[in-house]
Length: 224
Ligand code: NI
Ligand code: MN
Image 1 (cartoon, rainbow, N blue to C red):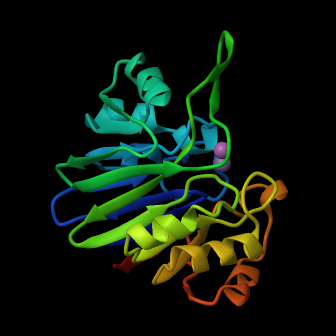
Image 2: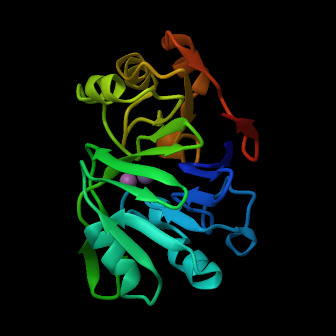
């Protein structure tokens, strides 16, 4: 399966049968080099409702017919805008046409603004995506938590996508500890340098982690 970094927490995954995009924040993202109208996908995975994650999900779903998969409230928020959405909840797994998806905990919040004010959009999540015999863990936005050890025990994680930008999520040293807890074969930093408040040198993460870290360039792809 092919993993491509589009900046912030947005990645695409191309399995042998399907195209996925995770947290498609492209419009308003100063680092993004991809336009939402150029995204081709079958499924859109959204970790939580914040605009830097939900982003262009509804517009992409509307144009492509892709299904949005997220927590119940975020999925219903999208479905209410006339697109296909599948709700899940933390701890639940499901076999999709592309493979298996399981939602994990994430210590964070989840909301989005509407003309009526803030809508609270359920619990934020991480996502374990298993396809073509490989498992990718996208942590979403989260602080460090000890249950990452359990996630690592129960799953053989090939690639862990971890936020390192600090302030809203783990910083580089906590993320390095997460790599250890998860026992991930490879870790890729995300959610940094998009805005001043999350400016971090990813080398700090690479230097702190014991396991392999791959700092992906924006637009770069790796084969998992
Ligand atoms: Ni967030
Ligand atoms: Mn975020």
